[in-house]
Length: 68
Image 1: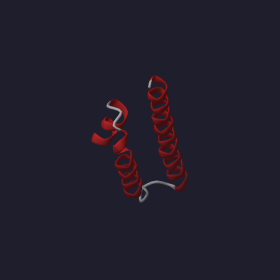
Image 2: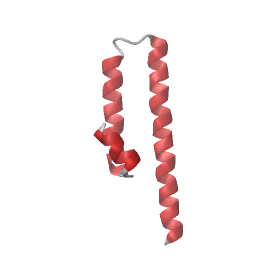
Image 3: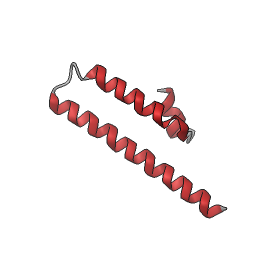
C-alpha cells in the first residue's frame, strides 16, 4: 500500500518497480484461490494499471520538457 501512495499520490515514479513486484506477489498468493478466468482478469487489471502509470509518467516528462 505504501508503494501505491508513493507512485500515485506523490508522483515518486522510482517506486513503480516495487509497486509492480508487490502486485505480482499478491497475484501469486491469490492465484491459489482464483479460477483461471478470475486470474486472467486480475492480470489484465494489473496491466491496465501499469499502462496508466506509464502514460502518466510520460505526460509528466513531456510537461517538464516543455516547461524547460
